[in-house]
Image (cartoon, rainbow, N blue to C red; front, side):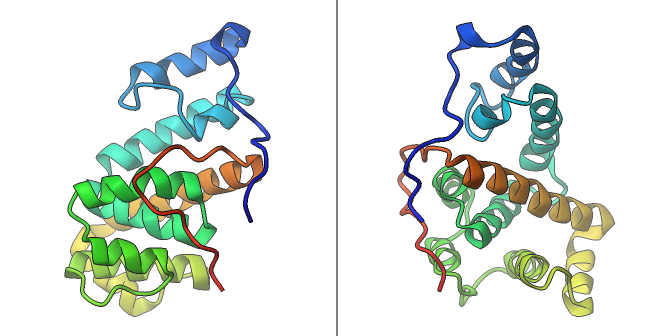
Length: 189
């Protein structure tokens, strides 16, 4: 599906309510540096946006599995939802953080990458099982727990849930995709 029109486009800051301004300012002042997607559509519910961005700030920047693996989990989630905004933003970041081009390309195609470091293989398999099976097998759980511990496994689940929420928001709102070096995701068969 190609979105035809952004249903919840950016609102000019001068049109923001006091509540919107109060909750938008920490995002602007934080590590994101601006009110960017997905917070543009979420601005319509400022308190939800605030809770969402705080969760995301932790998961994206400080998760127990580290930035490289977080970025891979984001890509797998974006692929599962065919979420173009998240893909456009995070595919270049994943590459910069050390995820190989071959892995990014395989995830984009909806297939398991052929050769990954063990930690990436565990993250990939865990995320795919969680999205596609709505659960995680004992074997995959044990691999993840051995590598990341309980906190890391919980953070990995959180990353999948958080980016699924953002994918739902932006797919429903038809959020405009930013310019990116990443190729757009093709629909999965």
